[in-house]
Length: 474
Image 1 (cartoon, rainbow, N blue to C red):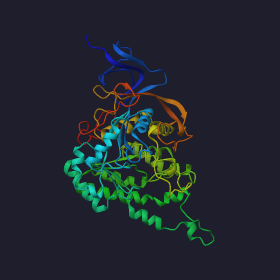
Image 2 (image 1 turned 45 degrees about the vertical axis):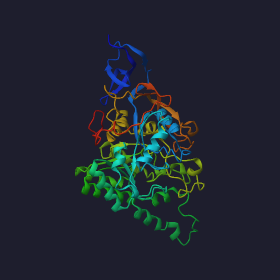
Image 3 (image 1 turned 90 degrees about the vertical axis):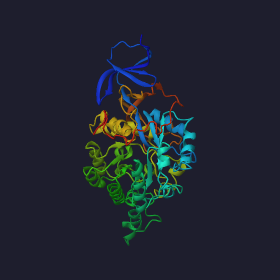
Image 4 (image 1 turned 180 degrees about the horizontal axis):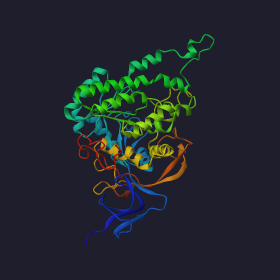
């Protein structure tokens, strides 16, 4: 006789191959063993039938998370970050190489990071390496140790231990990474464009009838956006595209904010260059018109831009120019986030949104009549494919049983103090979102803490096979 399954989850609505169907998902040894008919008789140690109003979806794979441990664990640590992830339907995260101390720019730094994460992770955790001036020429050992690629800044990162690359250094990094088939992921803002914006006087400063403020940028959100202009992203992305064209290296644009860069990205993709692009929930859920002066909980770099820009980002997701959505969860203490009493130049820049990213995107998508399966394509199937996690991103026999019971029509009001994140600061605080996570299973077990695994080269598929698998929205 066939041994019983460990778990069977029955639902009237399961996302399979990008479509909804009634099904019973059977799990054995942490893997989806079969997808049966809803009423099929299956022997299992545990059977769960989802109630009306809940659907069964694959766990979200978030490829852009700043956990900050060790070194800045007071900002966020692996316990709180991964618990927040699971509460938000995220079953896999890939951790950024900063703002931890040491940064993940060496094999030794990766070992420190893995040691910190291993006993705490409630979900699966992978790691990005870092490409900084001092690590150039020594990236391949870190790749072989299991990082999923290398993050680089083209403008100052905000922390001294992670300096940015100049344009010539960017080219060196791409050449080196091309040599071993790796991936460079880029914070694409051009420092010259940022400096030029900082040197441009505000209208108030050039008006002789006005009394200039002590700090003209200060609490004014529009002035903050002007200090991080579209041109900064456009110029930096142009440098990346030029480097990819010359070297053949695979590159990825992180947290695209400016729609003005989309034409260049479309042209690069039409040329066949190995370039991928992400945007973030906050760029899709908010617009500059909604952000009050002094509301530094909304500060991020590049910034949240205007409503027309947001519309164009959504269009670029729908037509495949933007490949995926990741949270860019970048928390800090409340003291840092509200430093300067609402001064955008003093406050820490970063949105704390890991737990809320899935419902936030779904809420904004639903308002545009975009179906839930498209959202999961961008946040689960495509993110998993992007980093080469062939076991993740879909409900399919043979894949990890990372499952989420999700109530797409249920609403909730965000209370930052009730989130699992370490610090009760959120741009979504007080906002009503749609989509409630009921249960999160990681490899067939309800997430209670400490069950996550660390992902390395043994789980990474070479070159990722981006957007080529079932469930892709491309």
